[in-house]
Amino acid sequence: MSQTKSQSPPTSPSTAQRGRFAGRRTGNRPPRKPREEAPWIPKTILGKKVAAGEITSIEEILSKGLRIQEAGIVKKLLPDLKTEVIDVGIIQKMTPNGQSTRFKALVAAGNENAWLGIGMGKSKQMRIAIEKANNAAYLNVSPVKLGCGSWECRCSEKHSVPFKVKGKGGSVTIEILPGPRGLGLVAGGKIRNLLKMAGLKDAWTTAKGSTPTMGSTSKALMECFRKTFSQG
Image (cartoon, rainbow, N blue to C red; front, side, top):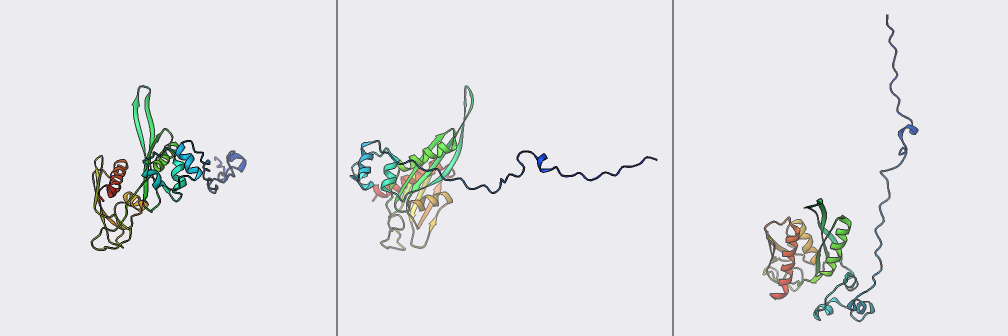
């Protein structure tokens, strides 16, 4: 008769056998510290005047038709501006050396008080693309004319647009209509965020075209805001 040998259940490997990563805590890592922004050192004549206090408002710069070439100028004159990444996409292109991949980022800068800028940045690294877009958003900051053009409201507060405006960017067409107080922003998610960053609280909107293409959508929206001055 053949004798059967009892087999003991396999034992779990010891800590020493689990490898050099045993015992490490991977789920409770402390959050990364935000990168500290380097102090602004003005390089242009306009930047040096702003840093010296000779120019104290961005309205003064725009009224003189001066060109802003440093993001630090806008950051100093509008310290309440906040940035938000709107969209990040991938650009793939065939080259003689093979396929090339780059990132394209879209960033908005606004203070929810009649100032908004949108910038785009491209790079092989996502972080650098976002940084470029962030810098461009500050350089593109422009005023937004607020008011109350709603016949249902007719108040004197600046919670909407003063009249109906329409803008076009690529295949996208956006129309903003004044809304009464308490209406809120009747718009899609990303468009609503941009309207809020510009300072609008109540408005109707209609959008046609490929609105998920945020590059065209943001251009159409900025044209709407420019027309609040040109049509007023």
